[in-house]
Amino acid sequence: MAMKPLPTWIRDNDSIVACTEKIRVMKENFDEIKQITQDAFEDGLLMEVSETQMREALHTLVDDLMNPYPKK
Image (cartoon, rainbow, N blue to C red; front, side):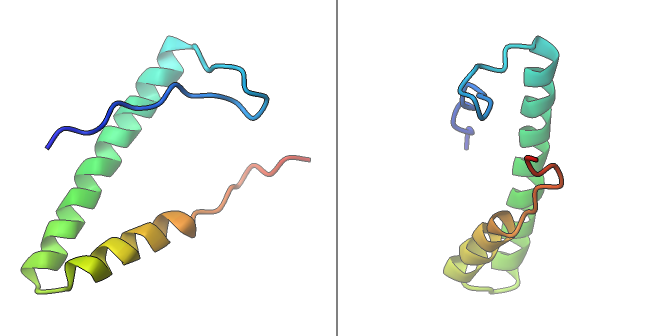
């Protein structure tokens, strides 16, 4: 299954992140996250965990991410 195209990355001030290197790193990060998440999802399903519960747990994981760079 192909991943949906990544968004145009924007800053908090609505300016576009245009640096090619930054965009490349974001793509690589998302590709890696997608693969690791897919593997964990499939493992859960193979262990007979509810698909709904797996999706909810993965959503919670993202919701619980903390920003180590808060605005001052």
